[in-house]
Structure formats: C-alpha cells, structure tokens
Image (tube, rainbow, N blue to C red; front, side, top):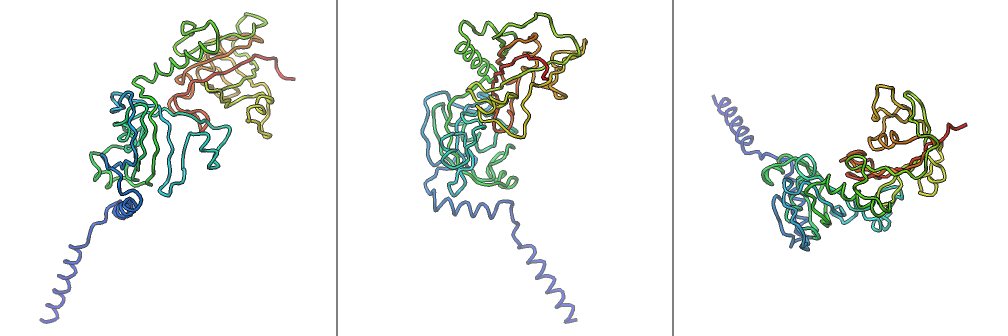
Length: 339
C-alpha cells in the first residue's frame, strides 16, 4: 500500500512539473539579446509600430510616402549595417570604395522599391510610411520584421518570423504613385537631352524609341528564317555599360574577360508566320525592346534603341548591374558574317 502511494506521489510531482514548464517562443532568446544590446548602444531610440526603433529622423518637406495603396513605389538611397556597424549593403559608390566592396561593373545609385506585402519587408514599409520626400531616417530593424509577409502586431511577428537585425540609413528621394509614367517620363527626358530635335512624340510605341545613326545599304526587309550578325553595346541611362560583344568596347568600359569570345552575335530571324518577339540571339530569346529594335533595322544599318523597363528586365532587373525598373539603351550595328 505504501509503495502505491509513493508511485502516485511521484507521478503527481512529474505532472505538476510538466504543467509549469515554460513554452519557448521562436524569438524569446533573440528578443532578450536584442533588448540588452539596445539598452547599451541605443537607449534613446524611439520605438514605432510594429517595432522599428528610430535613432535619427530628419523630416523631409516633400510628399508623404503614406502606404503602398497611395504610393506603391519609392526612390531611395540607403546603407545597411549590422549591429556592429559594419556595412552590409549600399548603392553608394564612394562608400563601397571605402569599405572595399566596389565593382566597376555594378550599378551604384538610387533604387526603386516596390512596396506592400510580398514586395518589401515589413519594417522598411513601416519606416517609410511616416517619411516625406527629402527626408532621412536612421533606424534599427529587428530580425522578426525582416519579412515580406504582414502581421497585425509585433507579437505576431515575434511568433512567426526569425531573422538578423540590421541598422538602416534611409533617404527618401521621391515617392512614385505611378511607376510606369515616372519611368517613361525619364526616358523622354533622356531622349530630349541626347537626341537634339527629338521628343516623346518620336516614340514608336509606348516607352520605346529608335534612332537611325547610319543609313542601311538596302531598305529591303530581312527574309524569314534568315541569319544576320550584329555588334552591340548595352547601357543604363546613367551611362553604365553592362554588356557588349565588341572587344575594344569591353576593354574601354571595364567589362573585358579573357574567357569570352568577342565576335559579332548571330541573330536568327523568325519564320514567315512568326513575330518580332520570336527573334533569337543564337538559341536564346532576347528582351522585347532589343528584338523590336532589330525588327526595324536593315542591312548594314546602325541605330540606337532606348526603352523603359517593361521592354527590358522589368521589376527584378538583372544581377547587380541592371537595377529594377531600369530603362535601357542599346547601340546596334548590322554587320557582315564574320570570316
């Protein structure tokens, strides 16, 4: 009888211990560590919803960024540092040189951010919402706000998201209610500056311009299923050359690679029932604006195509060279088949 009572007492104690065991949350330890670090290094940081800590705020005088439904895109300049102050990311050329991350083939300059769930992380969107164009904000983003998902409050972020905390230095240059119009306006201004006498009235289709710089040897269209050869230089509107198949140009613009063969590129024309978008470089399809420019050209012609990003690399850009929402320029020459 005593043995049974003893077993029952031990079982009761175990059950009580289990009932009192604390439930560990996803970010419990991270939150304690973050709070301790914050208290030591930034005790005067001002917390704003849903948990962004503002260190410095220089208000702008321009348009309020508000939310993504009002201004779905913004133009920004920024620096991202880790909690030790080491630069992790920046589009500032001089700073990149100072910290030893500079690459002559990379794009440096303002960046267009698309806002909203699934596009921009929650902490950045929250920090932007109270900024006006021309303003600067330095703030801390806890790791649990480094997500493109959206939750109702800080507690829900803490339960669902883990990540690495960072310090942002963010300058809001411009708010963009209509990114397509904003971009095509910039292309129009570029055309007016670089092609005297030309304007937005000279576009061949929305956001696309083509200017002949050397007359063709024939005005006959290329036959279907033919193969032609081209030389080209592709660049951003700030002048950064990102691609060329011309050896001397590659060397001049810092793109040369000894492992690459520099020779006129093969362009395969579509069949008689095809469209300009079926034009291929070798076996690969090309971006819409490039294909459309080729479709307007004739033997031995030289020309320049300028077009907005919907006809290029769109909302994602390409690597570290072509940013999102970047208009492009291509200088193209139709040449003879290499011997």
